[in-house]
Each structure stands twice: as structure tokens, then as C-alpha cells.
Image (tube, rainbow, N blue to C red; front, side, top):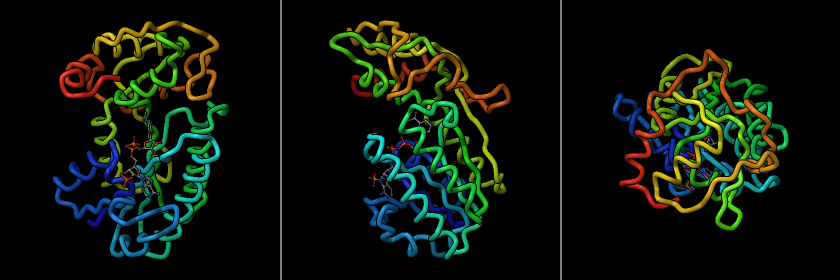
Length: 254
Ligand SMILES: NC(=O)c1ccc[n+]([C@@H]2O[C@H](COP(=O)([O-])OP(=O)(O)OC[C@H]3O[C@@H](n4cnc5c(N)ncnc54)[C@H](OP(=O)(O)O)[C@@H]3O)[C@@H](O)[C@H]2O)c1
């Protein structure tokens, strides 16, 4: 089956392209670097010809509130219109666990807007809600850094390896449309402070993690368990420490 991956060059997208190609599907990566721009609509109609499934794992280049809202609303509107015209039978999108609970995050408000457009569209769909990727710990630390300290709340996080997210999205992609949402999280629950402290320590990063109840996570004041998936969520299998062992050898410093 022909599957188009919007954002197929990204962290999750590139892993999905590999997985689904290995399963024998005709997989096409679509993003600005291959001439497909969902903001302008350029190249969309052409790449969707004959596609049965479209997976949207694109991301906004800017996380600024207005820019990210514009990205997800304009891109999703263009993608869904092109899918309708092309007769695509399944739209799969990757979003974030807890989007609806964290309303003071501009990024998550944009993801809610994306999800609303998908639910209102006539195209059959599946939404995958994933928790924060292990790979994202460096960005979390960066946005929370004040001098040589990293200020984080003790709210809870159940992060997951990008490889396990790609696996979950891949399973949904080859299945029937859910017209609903599935959740996937990692195998362990940490406080934000513990998660980031472990990552920094493994990398020999000298920054000190400071617990700060007023610290914001990309603009959001987290109280406790808003970002945790429900009890019945799928679970990735890779533990954080095992992922860190590989990341320390292969990855750049946070
Ligand atoms: N980070 C997390 O912890 C987390 C957790 C849950 C869910 N998510 C969701 O996961 C999704 C994928 O994230 P990611 O980290 O894999 O993304 P990423 O690595 O930043 O990749 C972004 C992709 O979007 C493409 N793109 C950017 N602008 C585009 C445009 N105008 N038209 C078409 N494609 C465009 C890029 O293409 P080029 O390479 O050609 O520029 C790239 O392939 C996001 O929607 C995010 O909300 C993230």
C-alpha cells in the first residue's frame, strides 16, 4: 500500500519510513526538502496520488505560540483538503499525551487545534498520543536552564524512546482507522527533576537540577500528573538508562 509520511525526514518520520518500507509498503517521505510544503500546499496533490494512508509527523520549525498555532492549523487544513481530493482513506497524526489538560502551553493548544481539525474532517483518522521522547530531554534541559542550574518542577513524566513511538505509530498506520485516539508512554515514571538529572549525569553535564514549583515547562505550569497517559496506554519497552547508554556513546552533549 502507498503510505505518505509528512515529515518523513524528522526524528519519528525517518524511523517510520524505514519500518514501513521494511514491511514491503510503498513509502514516500514528504517534506520541504523533497518539495512538499504543507503550509503553502506546494507538491501535496502530486505526492498524494494513489496514497491509501497519510501519516502526519511533521513539526513546526518555531515553538513560539502564534507561529506554532499557525503551523498546525494551516498545515492540517491543507493536508486534509488534499486527502479529500485524492480519496485518501486514513489520516494518522502524532500528538502529545495530555494536550487537553495543559491549556497554558501554546504548543499544546496548537496540537489541540490540529486534533480538532482532524476530528471534524470527513477523512477517517487515527490520532496517536505519545509522551515526551527521550531524545527531547536535551531540549527540556535547555529551556529550563538558568545560568548553570536547570529549574524544573517535580511534576511527573513517563518518557519514551522515539524508536518505540515509531513502532506504535507504524502499527496504527497499517491498521483500520480508529476514528479515535490511542496513547503510548514509556515503561517508567519519573519526576521531571529525576529524568533530567539522570540524563545530564550520564552525559557528564555539570549543570545542577533544582526543584522549583514555579518552573514552567515550555510556558506551562505543571502541577503533577497532567502529562501521564492513562492506565490502559500502550507502553514502549526501552528503559531510559538503556537508551542513555547508547545516546552517550553516539549522541552530542545536551
Ligand atoms: N518531542 C516530543 O517529545 C513529542 C512528544 C509527543 C508527540 N510529539 C509530536 O511528534 C511529531 C514529530 O516530532 P519530531 O520530533 O519527529 O519532528 P522533527 O524531528 O522536528 O521533524 C519535523 C519534520 O517536519 C517537517 N516539516 C517542517 N515544516 C514542514 C512543512 N511546512 N511542510 C511539511 N513538512 C514540514 C520537517 O521537514 P524537513 O526536514 O524537510 O524540514 C521534518 O521532517 C510532532 O508533531 C510533535 O508534536 C513530540
